[in-house]
Image (tube, rainbow, N blue to C red; front, top):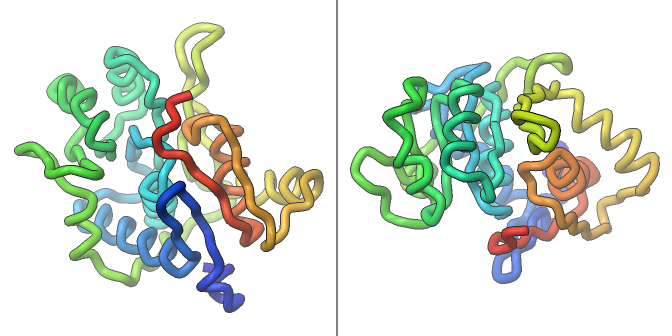
Length: 231
């Protein structure tokens, strides 16, 4: 919102190898995702799992869920099915948004996750019982009033890699990205609106999410995402 309010709607926000979203397009998609999730009955504090490749859809869904006060919960696309089940159960996820090639991992264990009300698919015609993110956003309201959240309210949930035991959920505040930008994005990297960023770690990791999405967008810069990059 802030970047568009500064008159930079046409500035590039997210680049993929064959696609580019401006800040105006990003805000449009974020608002529609938020409105769509809200229309499904997803409310403040509920967890929305993201099993998505690094992509424009990841950004729109992550930010759209945050916009309505829900907690986006990125999962690694490298996780095995039993790991995904454990994380969905631990998070109490009410919805899972997955790219079409990853959706079968969710669908196969759906009946074992009692909190999971919706499986939303990106990039293909959904199977019976699933929803299409494209169809949701096509009919969603362009206006999505942000939830009345505070800096210390929960914003998103990330899981550790589990190298020292079972993965642990770490709940981050809305202030996390702002503080990281002030201390590291601006304070160390000196990020500005004319910069282009590329962070190799997946956006399901803390560093990948911050360096590859949150910090560039906070600076009004552009970030480059590789959807087909598994590692």
